[in-house]
Amino acid sequence: MTALFHFHRRQVLSALAVLTLKPWAAEAANLWTYTLRAARGQTVYFNAWAGSERINAYLQWVAAKVQRDFGVKLQHVKISDAADVVKRVRAEKQAGRKDTEGTVDLIWINGENFAAMKRYALLSAPFAQTLPNFQWVDTAGKPTTLVDFSVSTDGLESPWGMAQLTFFADRQRLPQLPQSMAELLALARSQPGRITYPRPPNFHGTTFIKQALIEHAPDVKVLSQPVTPETLQAQAAPLWRFLDALHPHLWRGGKQFPQNSAAQRQMMADGELLLALTFNPNEAANEIAAKRLSATVQSWQFAKGTIGNTHFVAIPYNAPSKAGAQVVANFLLSPAAQARKADIDVWGDPTVLDVARLPAADRARFQSAPRAGQVTQSAPALPEPHASWVDALEKEWTRRYGV
Image (cartoon, rainbow, N blue to C red; front, side, top):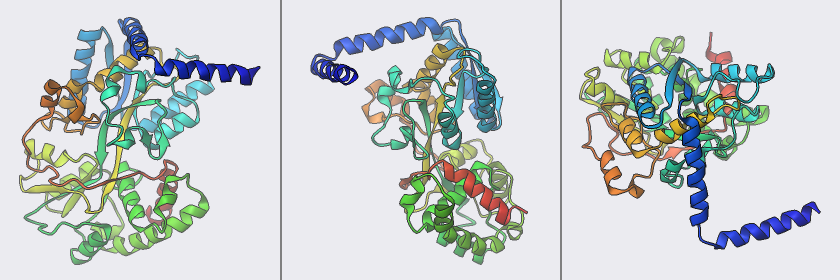
């Protein structure tokens, strides 16, 4: 009986597929109208990293817009690490919190934190593709909008912005920019004490490690699969040899590391270091515009590519204001919000949208003259290793170099 039911169901679905799509569009519009009505008057507690004044100011702008246009109050819950929020939601589930009794409505997330929430069923029902503005997301040109650290998003999180490992340096101090980890090692040997990277588990430091892993792994395809002790040993052995060779030539002999990328950036600005790194290709341009870096600073990515990914927003399973969270997520995908976020004078976070497909008026929002410090030639975005590699690499790095 069950097989027969599924057979007839497939026949019905096949028949509907050849009919006009207007009824389906109408149904989606009706569902979204219901979501908008349910969202009005709700308060959305958005747990998001608060380490940037620019980002905090942008979220204040978003809050004003969604309050005015949709009657949704957005409360930015300022956090330092999304992993802490994941632990809180997991504790709520273990304590038996029901589907509307949580403390988090929306979370800024990606990578191993998303993988953990998906693994422990801490996320609400798939919603991303039902958002009206998702139609403009560049899922073809930016496949990481659908795959997060080699883990399929399955509609459980909505893309918000793009990121790619980017280096920047003052060309007056460093005329020849290294184009690979091998060239970086050569530079460190020729300029001892002038190169370093943030200390893992800071995510910029871990990203540096993953970039070196990708460039040295015997079989890079293995990195897209969950890590095992055997694959860690086989694929990471050349990485540790590279770091063993690099560390003696780093700042303070590789015995100490900056706590984060902001500290490294300041050390570069002061002339103590030759270069710094970021995951926002526009960060140096932001800092130049704010007069915190010299206009002679240039950003670049390694010739054969650097790690790139997408950051997202997700709704926990027990969010009290799920409708409001969807309305906020949809607004974050709007051309107006994405263009403002991409503006270097505001944030400078690259868009997830396919700008070429937008209506002309919306395309115009993204048009701006090149700015000092921007990447002049983008390199390929290399896919992140599977999320499970993060913890394994950080633990082994700490065991080897963390003293």
